[in-house]
Image (cartoon, protein in one colour):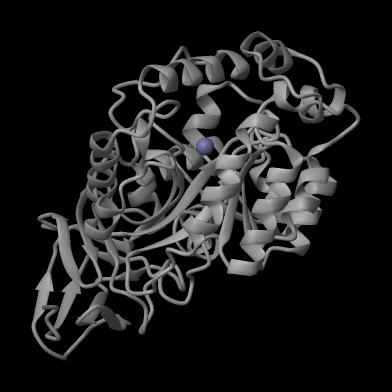
Length: 412
Ligand SMILES: [Zn+2]
């Protein structure tokens, strides 16, 4: 049973995200929800967590937990993207179906790292039980792949059944993830978009991730085509030539809600297209995965200036060192000194919650929202801007609260 008891947590800094940091601030909780965020609280028992920051629980908008048992990314930093995809396909062949152990490990790692909401790309064999039990909210996007005609029946069969699993009493909600331009036939993408609209479910699609993919969309040639020809999965409809990512964005705009995963190589017109639809379309930037592949600098400032909704994600341990969003935040701040740290923090909290369609319940510390909190130890020094204490530091997450309860760490 959830306790309805009222309790108050105090920290050196509270970062509500909905407003500026509060020195010596408090967060008051009743049951699962926040009831007050203020400078001092005179009501009830106050638990002083000491030299820490209280943040909204972190939101990881994009992960593939099936790779969470990898100790290090596949391949080598800077490798060609099509070559990396070959390694992933090889790994799938060695162990078909997602390993429940890896997924469970990824859930645990995420919670310990302060994540309270996750966008997970899942295989058809995914284990519901793990997500029922896990102490975080998840959108489970069923991965749909069909590069050739004879593989399309199964995802078309599974996708509507997956969306029927919607049950608001659970901690997870279903979504769909047609994988990418090079792995999804046009009719499967169209079917997924229609199902998303009809079922009011979110959709995630990898797009404009690599130069090789752009080359494929534009010319129908390059390392991706070579790879798929070798594999015998080269349907000419996947390699139409003369296209651009905007063609896919137009298709995705028909979805109830769409997450464009990566968007590393979107152009200005494409960013403007996303900005016009920021209430229903977001782009997910995965900073350390982006760095692993040595892509061109991420156009974060341009996207934000255009008005696009940007969320952060880790992607998987196949391309990122771990599943910690605090690490992604700090890395992104280092890569984008021209973007305010308050803005970067929002990308892994409130804006990521918006991207996943849950800002009314999560993503900031405000009365009425779930008491989902990440507690981060702070260095002892002082700083003019408290964001510096959070970002210019290696101090870890020491506690995670989910719906009012401490679910990882000691928070002290
Ligand atoms: Zn991905």
